[in-house]
Length: 146
Image 1 (cartoon, rainbow, N blue to C red):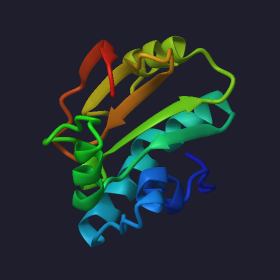
Image 2: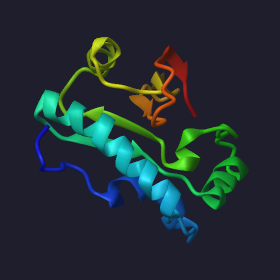
Image 3: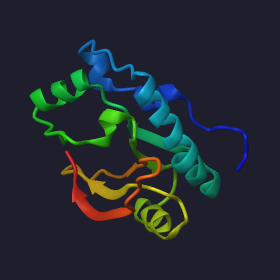
Image 4: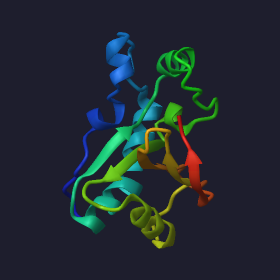
């Protein structure tokens, strides 16, 4: 793997909702470590394979951000790995999301969960998580996200 990283921490902690409602979405040291592992073991290999940007559409969510999303009716999971810095939602720029999903599923990339998600507006994305040393390789196809 190359030493050049194609991601920075700000991509994985950015949230329009946190900005709009002035919510601190900074992870603690444990969650930062989880984010770094997610980048190193999962997101970076995907970026290297495709050779194009991987756009993060959702990353770390603090407890306060999670509560705001719940209050807004977004129905976030109580056990979401976004809360621990172990998960990201993304698309690969210019690539078919279903094809990327299928490639990851059959690749040697270690992951805990791989979910092909969509919403009522027709948006599709991939949710992937990484739980160092405890990955289940759970695959969920066509899950209606919030």
